[in-house]
Image (cartoon, rainbow, N blue to C red; front, side, top):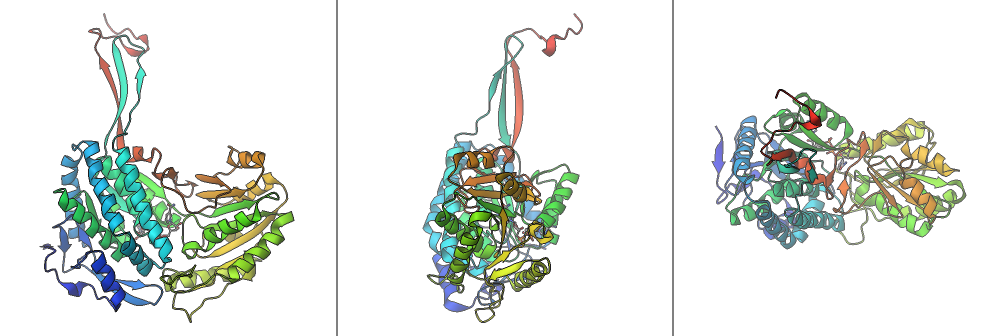
Length: 528
Ligand code: NAD
């Protein structure tokens, strides 16, 4: 049977933390007690002794930093049940009041931005500045959601029938499943959860198995805010494998919407299962992001954008720049400058100042990178810089790599989740756009040009086929204000800003007749 564990006095032996850093971080996050990986609120940590352990590692050192008890099927069930029960009352809380809860969540996140960002670095491996950036995104989306809580607008329109009024309104949808990828251990949850909460939904979060500690830390923060509001069950957590807990979620008709962030291969499977039960899915899947550099581009600007886009997060962003399509007249110059910049990238401990690139997430990712480089060479790619693993730095380090690549090589069509950048050349703009669009994914794209006509063509219907298209801005590093997501195999989902909130609500069309007559639409006469 399940055992509900109160936080006070909860056994510490569930986590085996090494090193003062981790202990100090947890203290700064005000996490005194450590818990199993399922939770429904302040007093809702669930310990099921049958739950399997999940170890979490620091990818920079290979050191184990935590051991978490994963949710069993019974624990999963009671978490979802709690989310269902809470939804009944949460949906009736006025939206601006729901916004106050999110405003306080944003304040709580501001207080812990530094240690939470450091925890992201420690568990996922991105450099500290990027870890903090991720928490800043959480704060930003909370701000956005607070404003949104007073702007869940529906439209009104005029009826063809006299004495009738027509309008649309948006109702809360239900408990929402959130399945997230390892590379944004906290921000992607917030894009979904903050918006879903002001929309009147409750959420059940399954984080990636590489980063359970970040999720548990977030749940602690959420729990403190929930306790202040006398709430539980709005934000819920279940930690477990994709094939176990993840598949349970996509098959669970108690979750009318599942927001899935991850690879195309797993997203496709999730989408099929959700569709089978006629559920709703938000799919945020892999990217293969291209950046065109024209003959008139500001090369210094392009260089900086490419460096951040291709090397940032060690090439493990969905929006990572993976393909440079450079005009033949500037390609050699740009490539030479890029190679020089790559040679100066400091790789190493992501917590250290001056380090630009940390480790990959695990040793499997290193193996995949090395295998991809073999394929790249076999398909005619010439490695210009990088291309090696760096075991002396730790188990998960590789060098950022630039490859001169034949554009028709099949491997270019794949997303290799590593810091590998392909450079290809073009002569005419339409050719560049064709090369750009010739991949199955459609997330983020960019062009560097000083020519207005070129920029407009890239942004036009016959330009980039991606969900996001930028001019003189790189492919990665989106703000929260716009809808985030991509086309084609990236899945078509939109999250975060703009009107992405509509996906978390159900639309109702209403007609009110105050005429005292019963005219039928389309002028139909039926009986007398
Ligand atoms: P992944 O597909 O291996 O896992 C993603 C999540 O899905 C994890 O929580 C995992 O446990 C879960 N999962 C796996 N199999 C499942 C199944 N059958 N049913 C339900 N859940 C399942 O991806 P990853 O390696 O964690 O992340 C990297 C990938 O995510 C890359 O392809 C990257 O481009 C993509 N990504 C996309 C976006 C976006 O917004 N488009 C953002 C971040 C990452």
